[in-house]
Length: 181
Image (cartoon, rainbow, N blue to C red):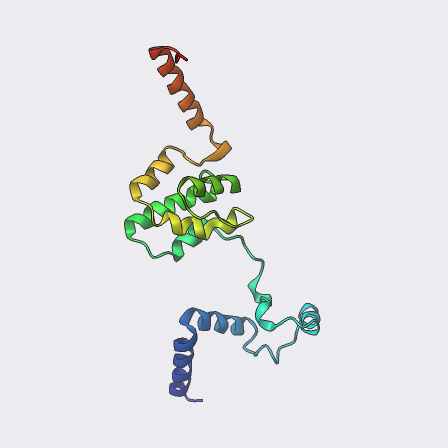
């Protein structure tokens, strides 16, 4: 096949399936020494899966390696944001990944309830990342800054804000006296 024909064929594939998908599949082919899956030697696990009726599309290729958990930074990177929002959400993502913001699934659910967001159906904190960050992208920047600066939704890992609130309330009670029934 001539280079111009190959370019045209690849162009039509990119048009139909998208650049990322075609590029990913080309990298997979390269990792398999350029041989199509049908002609390359299968591992024992692949042969068992094929015999059991598993489709090729549902299995990950051998070259994919171990799956790493999704990160909040990855979720923010996939969103289309203004530069200001991108910087702010990157800060929120760092706090999320360090468990300084929404450290537990319970905190994620409390956050959703507080802001009237649809409660995540996720069974793990990591699985709730896409929905939470899509919602955070719609929030006003000052509100996001307040959440981070005040340590809201920091859960039990940060007790400083709770201690400060108790001190403020105690000072207020000393100045005004105890409430009367």
